[in-house]
Image (tube, rainbow, N blue to C red; front, side):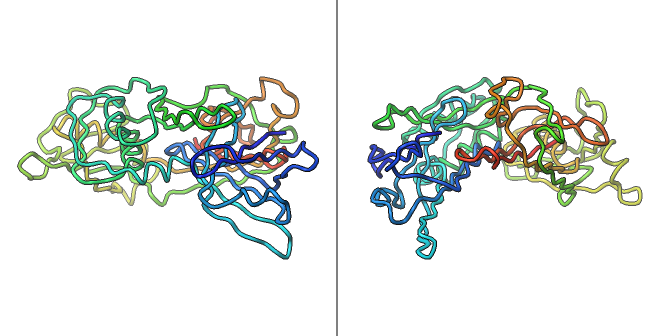
Length: 355
């Protein structure tokens, strides 16, 4: 059973929730949600309304929750609902980085040919969050022309450098001593863990979504003089297989075969706020086309996390892992992009896979 620490608004410990303590504050109906997108996480739980230590559960207080590998996650209580009829307090918390970084102003700045590490250092300079593992993700021009906040800025930098965010804190049992932002090339491992019906898949929902699908893109940037920057007249030195460059647009040949409209491309007009040259506009446009030229298929699985039941490393699953699923049509390889799990009930686990 997992011990959770309750911290006040100054991030000092004022109590614990531990279901092993006979007279302690017990938590139940808990769900810890983590997502690949921007390192999102939230935590929901309930406690008895008539418990003497319930007074520690207040809005803007914090909860420290350890993940499966011992890393400490910091949450801020945002919603507290009293269910008097059922004698329970229902609590919802968001990752503390959200409020912390949303409250920090980032003024306009520009960095030419810089790294993600340098850019993050700038936007986090007036916050309590420090850099952790920052993988090398190349060199980019970073240009923030308007006032914004550190939360949005961190996300924009992650998108620009195609990295994946992760937040954690260093906690000594009494207080939070350090808050850390990681930017990784790729979270999780290529485990090839196999999910199987009648073993660890309790249920599955498949969602096939083409609402935002296009087969070609027209990227448009802005020149230094304010005029539009397009691909007209530009010839790439190399065109990746399966794609074509025509006039001012880039097309996906495979997507066109599958999703064309009576022989016509599905065009997407896209404003590129970062490109400084036609070559960069082409690279950015191609990267965006790769994202929008495929069906957004999601497999939501209700699963039994056998690692927690058997302790076997072969059944280990983590956010970002590349896994396999045994379907009647054959094996499907996909990534875990959402992981929902209960700390108190091993049967309440859910993963979403994206191909």
